[in-house]
Length: 127
Image (cartoon, rainbow, N blue to C red; front, side, top):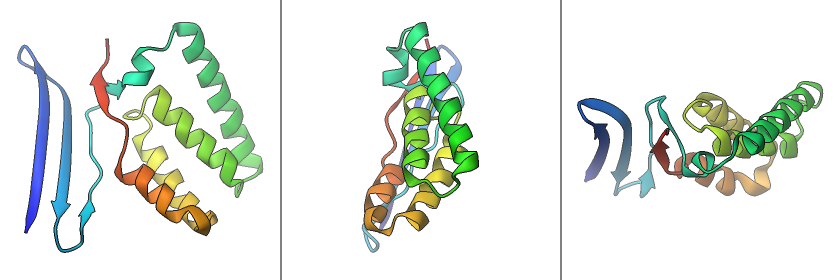
């Protein structure tokens, strides 16, 4: 058997966020959730403008490092974590691509990266 759970957050008549969880008993796996672009992590809602700017500067620096050191797993992981903290919906495609890359680069932590892929942080409507 397989189950799908869809959750939709609606404010007034406007959809704000959606999430989907697919569960298959045979494979005992969970699929990742998807969100509308208007969603962000609860963590990012609590960031001040100064902290957000600092993290965005760090993400830019890490991105530049990744251009020079394309196989630096620590730079890739740091970028993933910064993107998840800042705005997971905005960076979702990059996050997923980088987590795939990490699975290829760092075989010792494949399950950790798989968990990061499958169990994304909760999303909340932006203020």
